[in-house]
Length: 230
Image 1: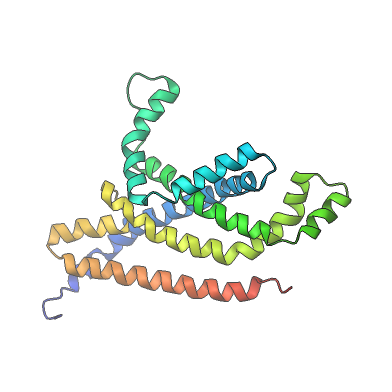
Image 2: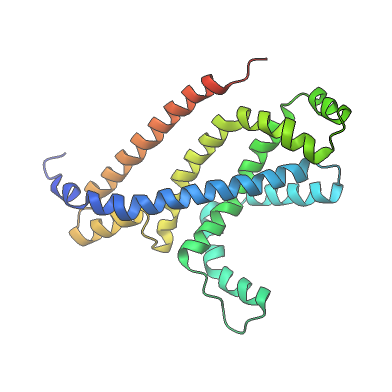
């Protein structure tokens, strides 16, 4: 089976794959994680707020996004964002958004729906008594959330947030459909150039497995260290 397997094509191209492809993948993953957590936190607070209008808007957004395939959202944003941007600023011509910016906005808005549910569960895991204690000390809602609830909730949520980030890292490979040179896209270019699809895609699969499995093990160990014993 491996008699014709060309390991030399991997040794010739691995530097390019990691410098160009993996660096892009990690950059997009990191920025999307930060943006997704921030937007997800806002959505979670909206869902838990006393305002029915805010709660309805956030709930509708989360349910809508989680019901649409990610690859479809990627296509929508990539092709529609120039026209949406032109409509927002009143320009006559489509705005040049760029593949990276379009992908970044897509992943932030898509992953925010999943981070929102994680944040909401983490916030609800904090006993209501602590909220009442904060209010008894004269804190308002914002101060109670910032100083009492969210710090504990984040500690509880760290393993789940990191697990979702691993899923995000895998999902970033979908930008390949836009011909963006992520890790999969870079490997595809080498594979098409040298006619070695089996070798390159096998190498990509091994790299993803090693990285995701290693990160999963670290998340499990981290969970044991940061878990709050009640």
